[in-house]
Every structure is written in structure tokens, then in C-alpha cells.
Length: 330
Image (cartoon, rainbow, N blue to C red; front, side, top):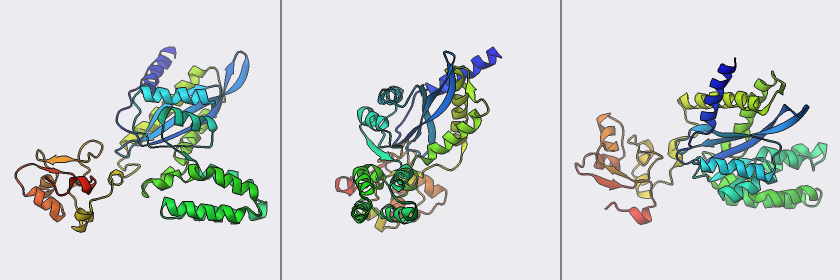
């Protein structure tokens, strides 16, 4: 049994300390609490998790740590460890409204923080009467239904002002939380349904709870790391073999050149601008040229890619770069 545990520990340690390669634009972090025996007492410890999505739109569990509480120093060390292992390119961190997480995110990652929308609505409804909660929830939801960040902020201000007379505490809460709750609206519309809350990591926490409830009280922290680490490793492997990406790759790219879009690229099957690791912005159409390969496969292409496919010499193409700098191709 001890040898089996040692083998599991080696695999879990290798998984949790592996180098983090590439860029991870979106990062969800959260914690769940488990009971463990320490010094003859039963105490609760925080098990923190980090789940990221890379530029290929794939999810992975990036890290786990065990601590006495969710204080700022603990979150700071947790994020620094991820950075030491190679975490980079983070554009948005999604979590619940924990001041320690917010401060650690600003200090270590210097990036945008998104307050979980679901948790915020629960906090907001606590300031409303029982009979008015449904109406208040519907009013707040009108801000989330707006098409862009500017419209969402305008609607948020309108709702807060309407609440100020009868529900001043709710209005004050909306004033202070506006930037954090609406941060996700500045990101691509295709991603927003998965960015506004911690639901992706909450489901993982639920699975951990389900599997650890069988144990109840762990004998030591090493046993927590062994079991929870194995669960996280299993979940990451499951995500890896899934055919569908968590987020689609084309939506990571910047807006398409208007000249290129005018030629009808919506149905272009040459893979413009998404060729190469991480969806490189530029690619030398040459060896092997993406449009030429698409032509050989009989795929439908736009006129722009068709012209490239029929050109024998390599042509530098920047289909997804700002056209003020790269159009026409040189």
C-alpha cells in the first residue's frame, strides 16, 4: 500500500509542478474547504485551485495549494508559484469577491479582475426585500443583456440610480462593484458566457466535494494532496482528449481586415490567420502554404486566399493584423 501511495504521489507531484507553457488569457481561481486532523484537532483547510484556458481554447488545471486560510499572502504565494512555473499572457482573472484574491491578482499578475456575477447577484439580493428580489434581479440583469461594455455601464448606472431611493445600500453596492462585475464585457462576445462567473471551477469544486465526502476527515495534508491532485489530473486528462475546444480558436483572433471581410471570408476554409501555434498573426504562405493545402483538399476559399494559393512564390500575409499597418501586403 505504501509503495502504491508513493507512486501516486510521484505522479501527482509531477502534474502539479509541471512547467506551464504558452499563454493563458483566462484564469479562474477559487478555493474549497476540507477537514483534516492537525495536532489532535480537526480543522478546516483551504484547497485553492487554478484553471486556465490557453490560446488554443483548451482548459487545464494549472495548480493547487493547501493553506490555513484564504488570506492575501497565501493567494500571493500561490499566484507567484504559477508565474515561476511559466504562467503568462493572463488577461482576465475570474473569482469570487475575496479581497485577498483581488489584491494578489493586482500585485502578481497586474491584470483585469472579474468579480463573479452570480455571487454578486446573491449579495445584491440580500439588500432587497423578499417580495422585491425577483424584480431587482431582473433590473440588474438588463445591464448584462447589453451588447457592449459602454451600453452595459450606462444601463448599470440607470438601474443603480433607480434603486437609490428605496434601496440605498443596494445602490451603493452597485456603485462600488460596477467596474469589477462588468469587466468581462470588454472581452470577445463569444467568450462572455463563460467569463462572467466562476461556474467552470465551481463544477470542479463540486466533483472534489463529492469524492472527498467519502473520506470525511483526512489524516494529514499529504492525503488531501494525493486524492485531490489525482482528481485534478484525471479532469485535465478528460479535457485534453475532448474533441471540442472549450472556446473556439477563431474567436481569439483580432477583428478581420475590412477589405478581406468584404471579399466574403466567412466561408473561407483556408484557415487564414489561425495557422501556427497560438494563432500567429502573420504567416509566410510558402512551405507548406495553408491556402495551397486548402486548394488541394478542395475546400471553399475566399478570392484573397485563392490568389495566394495560385501564387508560386511565398507572400507575407497578415490577414488578422491591423490593416493600417499591413495593408496592402508587401
